Length: 543
Image (cartoon, rainbow, N blue to C red; front, side, top):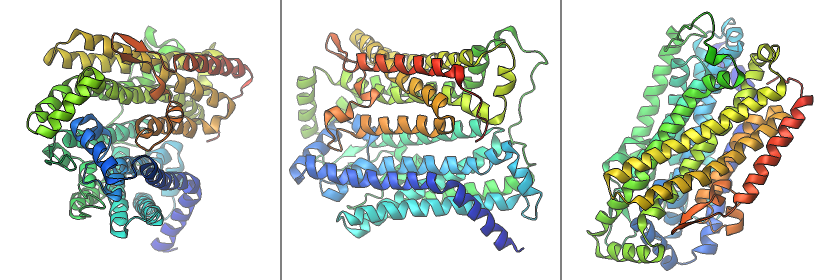
């Protein structure tokens, strides 16, 4: 068998394994593109309406943290402003998970040893993963472009949109392969990948928010931090406006360097080993590790720390960007007038900025909570759950421990967000009312994040094999509804189905409880059902 035929056999095996999963990523991106077009047509059907929103976005740069780069009020440019960063985010997550799944996860399961024992050798699986990931990103880019062309948008802009998303995917395909070489477990590699992706997304958003607006507030020139991030390179292609492909050259260069580094590392590294070695531990566990809660917490602590760091940074930005926004406004008379209007309507800009950021912090908290519950499924598949349950720890106690750890993780992430916000308040306005607003927003997101953990626990009991895709898909859909629902023209009732959007928020001197009661009821019902049904649930170790 030639190298080409061996590579083809490995590629066919991975296509069979990943076909449905990759189709969901690609189709989901196409649906988002079409939904954005339909939402723009229904909610912003004229250049004047779109121009007003762009002016508001430039006036409130927090919007730019979670959207793209304003490039004009035309239909295509406006849609690109709304969805290009999120399309890039989907491609990045798809690629990073794919890279780790076919390298480090294969080594953990022992399948990499079987493949390496054949004539395929050690480097071919990594090379095939690169080709597989490149093909997935090509399909992603192509389907996104075709979806935009199908709704009637210009072909050049549609192609640039797809290329921008695909280039970001290639960068994080290479990064995922590097993470798989560095870390001993797929859990650590995936956590690192997600953390770096979110950090890159945030860096590009901050660069956009601190950019220079045009006199008519329809276009924004990025500040220098944007050019440090692959997401920044992507949004500066400005689809349907400039249609510039040159900003994607750094992405292709970085992707190539990361891929070559991963290939070189895999050639020298033993199968199952890692560049960052595991720490040796004592022969006997410390007293603090002799309960299921403490054990699960020990396994989850690293991931919780990463989510908490992101929350602290977001909290800091939530109370420091308000003053930056006002400073930008003094340099532009039109922008200054819009800021004055926003302050008159909302009472102040700072609380609105803070609340917007805490939606993102709530998503981080939800991810930490879901990850704590998903860990049970990972332990079950790896066979490490059985030794735990062979002791005096019962199945209900085991699930209850995961629920407790998930709530602790959620609380710590939100506490980190409040701490970051408080630090920003001390360094800027010193407004004592903002402390209360931060605490109220965090309390609301605590209730929201608990919904995700409870529903994921119920999925773990009822459909073990669906635990991971269900839990993460739930967070992804809620994030889209919560962050993009209003912009996509979705009804408020539909957007409020997302717990992070329905969470209580501070309003003036009080709190709008919004969906507090239905979220508490859902959390309680799901956890009671999960714990009750867990009594009859047998181990399901099959992946």
